[in-house]
Figure 1 (spheres, helix red, strand yellow):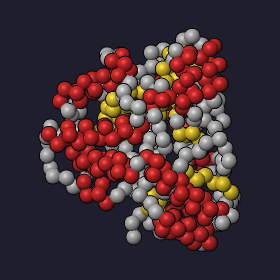
Figure 2 (spheres, rainbow, N blue to C red; figure 1 turned 30 degrees about the vertical axis):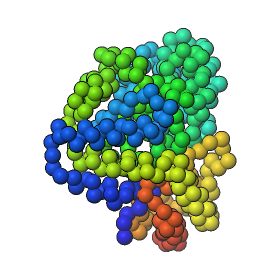
Figure 3 (cartoon, helix red, strand yellow; figure 1 turned 90 degrees about the vertical axis):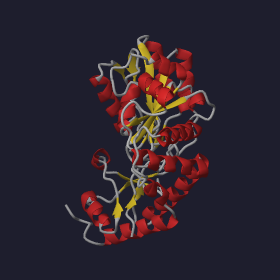
Figure 4 (cartoon, helix red, strand yellow; figure 1 turned 90 degrees about the horizontal axis):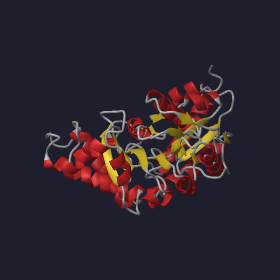
Length: 363
């Protein structure tokens, strides 16, 4: 029985993607690598920047790597709404890069408030850039990008966005929101494998990044120039990684973002209903916006989450226990990836079985 991954990445992938990992052994300088990277970049642009005018620049790294790449673009003080855990990570990156930040608290289930962004920009002439986490994965909150983009345009600030957990799972058009640069990875809603991530940026953003960033590896301008010049990356790209993600991006192009988002949301609703029948309390339902694949719950106090995770592994199901969410008495499950209704039924049945066993009351 295949392992089910019920967290928001990495996800269960299609057999075609796994098969592509066994591509013929070739050099990263082979012609097919450039062609595959080009198609990956175009597929990503089709998914998140449909209005055109953007360039996709791949890096061999996790999503946090490309997050660092766009944080390093900040030309002055970076406005960073405190939306949740991933915004806190961005703050740490900015501190390491010696980029000053301004921040304000957010409702964790609502995302960044455009009016607060407007007030912050009006009050601080030194703010050059605004960084938004589009989807805070730990709560499912979606920020209103088009409205914040309009605020940034009016106030003369650039908008930088983390779309790591929303790209491929939601309708996105970076041009519509006036986004200067966004970061994403392919092992979440693109249903690829970990290790290949991209920056999607407006041409002016890439041009202005030349020799301005603090990182050699994550130099957006140099990476884009190398891609245009040779069709490949500046540093060695693993062939199997590119081949597998090439297959994954092709699958998203065939399915379409709207259909994938609907599939995720249908399974999310099935899972939410099944877990509610077990007496668990959903968290965040009815709030302004939530992502297409996340179900957030407050489990009964007598349930040991660590014990539950171990028990579910015995059913070949992996759940993720986020420490900060657990400290708040919450747990989330995700219907992202190659799952269907039978998989969600299997999950709910396994959860019921574990709750009826030794998990309850375990310290």
